Image (cartoon, rainbow, N blue to C red; front, top):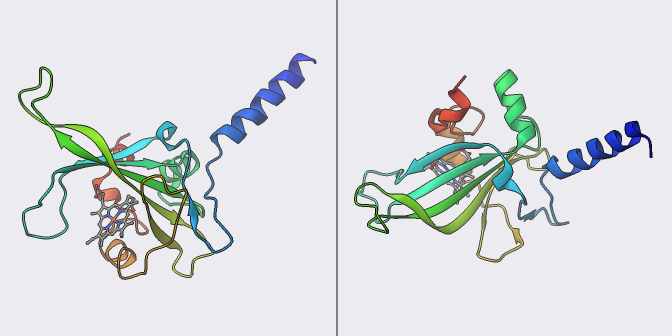
Amino acid sequence: MTMKRVFLLALIIGLILTAAEPRFTESNQLRRPEGYRNWPLVGSSLAMSYNEAPSQREEFHHVYLDPKAYKQYKSSGTFPDQTILVMEVYSAASQVSINRQGRFAEKLLRVEAAVKDQRFADKWAYFHFDEGAATAKAFPKKDCWNCHAEHAETDNVFTQFYGVLRAD
Ligand code: HEC
């Protein structure tokens, strides 16, 4: 194989490995996104609560954005069709090992996803993956979409809380 071919092959394999498009079942259930821990981590929050009552549990949220959407958002401030955001929720722990102050993300509790796709009448759909589940069904609009549409800064995405997207 010539060097040029080797290079092209490496390029194609690279593209396949980094391509992150949402995959659906025939009934529009989302298949669990893979490889998202290699995506840019755009948001991280601790114990954010959406109501006034003190939260029962302190949890870390880690938000990953697929590389293609990250690139487009950085250059144009918009999210393309087929954008995927994955939010991992971790328990917060302290007093472990040498730690005496502050908290760290300890144990993975939940995986949620937001996907922008034309197949959905409202463009964005929201999912929660039960432990070990390979697929997830979109939530009804009132459970997730409404709050995102009303309060998120950019096209249903809470960019106001994602420092990485604001940084130069
Ligand atoms: C009352 C408001 C509210 C509701 C209801 C809500 N969310 Fe969110 N969501 C937020 C806020 C605020 C963030 C910002 C990031 C964070 O929580 O750390 C967020 C972030 C997210 C993200 C990261 C990507 C993004 O869009 O910014 C996902 C994925 C997500 N939520 C999934 C869900 C799912 C699934 C449901 C329904 C079961 C849901 N949300 C319901 C307020 C809401």
